[in-house]
Structures are given as C-alpha cells and as structure tokens.
Image (cartoon, rainbow, N blue to C red; front, side, top):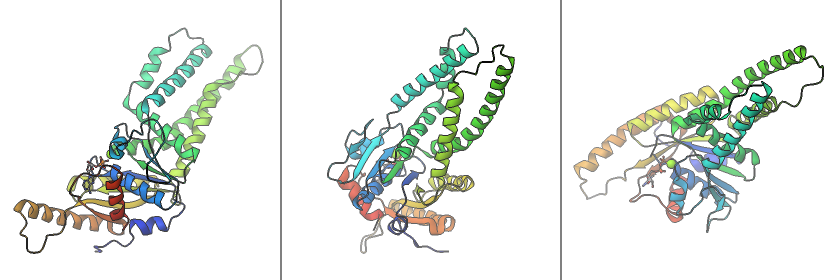
Length: 328
Ligand SMILES: Nc1ncnc2c1ncn2[C@@H]1O[C@H](COP(=O)(O)OP(=O)(O)O)[C@@H](O)[C@H]1O
Ligand SMILES: [Mg+2]
C-alpha cells in the first residue's frame, strides 16, 4: 500500500493546462469552500483569468472573502485575474417561473383549455428540485459563456451535486421522450385539421430542442477529462470518507472525471519534548487510523494533506496561506 502522494495538486494541474472546470465536493463542513477559494487564487496567480463561483444557496463565498460577491461577478482586491461570484438564486428562480408560466399559458391556449395557469406553475416550481435545477441552469450559463480561462465551482453538498449532475442525463432521456410524443401529437393535429395550413410556431417544441442541446453540451463538457476535474475533500474521519467513497463510485458510473482527493484537517505532529494531552493523543490516533483507510481506498488519487490551522480560514491572506500549503 502506498502511503505518500504520487501526484500533488501542483503537478496534477500543471500537467493539465487545458483544465477549465474544477469542482469541489464532499460532506458539509469538510473545507470545500476554502479549498475552492485557495485553488482559484493559485490559478489566478499563474496568470489565468479565474472565476470562483458558488452554486450553493448558502452565502459562503462572501463570508469567506469578507466581500459581497452575491449576484455579481466581483474582482478580488489585490489578486490579479481572480474574480468571485455567488449565484443569486432568486433571479434565476423568478426567471424560470416566468418562462414556465409562459409555456403553460401557451399550452393551455393551444389545447383550448380555459384553466388558470397558476396552479400548474406552483406544482412545477414549489419543490426543492426546482431550485436545484435553476442553479444548474445558471452554472451552465456561466460555463457556456466561457468568459474566463478557468472556473472553480464551490459545489453544493454532496447529495445536491450528485442530483445536479444526474439530472443532465435524466433530462436528456426525458426530453427525447417528450419530443417524440410532441412530434406524434403535431402530425396528428395536422392530419385532423380541416384547413391544411401549416402549424404555427411551437414554442414548447423549440424549448425542448434547445434544452436537449444544452444538456448534451453540458454532458460533453462535464465528462471531458481534458477540461473538467472533480476534487473531493475529506477529513480523516469515518463519515466524510464514507460520503466521498460513495460519491467516487457514482462519478465513475457517470463517466465524470475525478481530479483527486484533498485530505483536510490533519493535526500537527507532536512537538519533541512536549507531552500531548490525552485528548490530542486520542485524536491523533483516530486520524492515523482513518488515514490508513484513505490510502487504502483512494491510493494514488490523494493530491494533498492539509493541516488543521490554528484558526478558521477567512479573508484573502488566510486563503493565500492555505493555497501555499495546498500547492506546495
Ligand atoms: N485546514 C483548516 N484549518 C482550519 N480551519 C479550517 C480548515 N479547513 C476548513 N476550515 C474551517 O472550517 C469551516 C468549514 O470549512 P468550509 O470550507 O466552509 O467547509 P464546506 O464548504 O465543506 O462546508 C470554516 O470555518 C473554515 O474556515
Ligand atoms: Mg461551503
């Protein structure tokens, strides 16, 4: 069993200059946001125009940076080429609601149904998956716009990220099915209509075609190892390890490229001549044991071992310090 890093973050990213979309995932509280932030700062320092973006509804980036980056792409003071952006879900959700209302209204008119659209709009938008899908759409807009050399996404907690990505595959299947029945319905309508005049524009069909294209493009980008890498952050503790073990397997199944594992929160080694407290000794022993598991399961995918700092990581100086450790 190897118990040392065979390729660290610096080497991994150095060998992949075309990498454009980096994601950080893992259990809540393990350090995804700080690792994403440190990685973005490091990439920007290499001269690449970098966007640190959050798809997480919790306002964690603004807190991390001591800077309001909510709803607008904001340059980071004192860090050339680095920008941060927290997606404003409210706008996206309102926009999606409007679009859905328009489509439902169009459909009700098309089908000659005199029903209020509102009830259907609520059914479609009052569920948690709707907010997630709005976030996903927003993330895709950023990725497709391609205004930055590299994007570092501070991904929402594991289950959400998993659903987000799973959706792109499910969406595609769903849209294919929808399009097929739409085509059948349209030709039936044409057959039955007395006037043989051509069908008017069909916004639903247009939407579905467009949507399928977007999803196909998204899947292409997200499954391309030259451009995309997902990093998983864990602590040397049982639960976060279990979470990313599941995650890793799932990603393998979906063909999404994994960049590697960042192990965070390692206790510093004992100071010679100072006897550690029993508490520290126990925690060190626990971490050592879980590290064994980490090497056994993740092996050459471990990219960094990051120590627990004496205080939380907040503000650009602290983030730069973390970047130095992460990319030593
Ligand atoms: N290596 C570390 N040393 C000290 N504090 C850390 C370290 N990594 C993360 N933290 C702190 O732990 C908390 C959780 O980190 P965060 O990046 O927000 O986790 P996540 O995004 O996975 O929920 C934050 O307060 C952060 O400053
Ligand atoms: Mg976070």
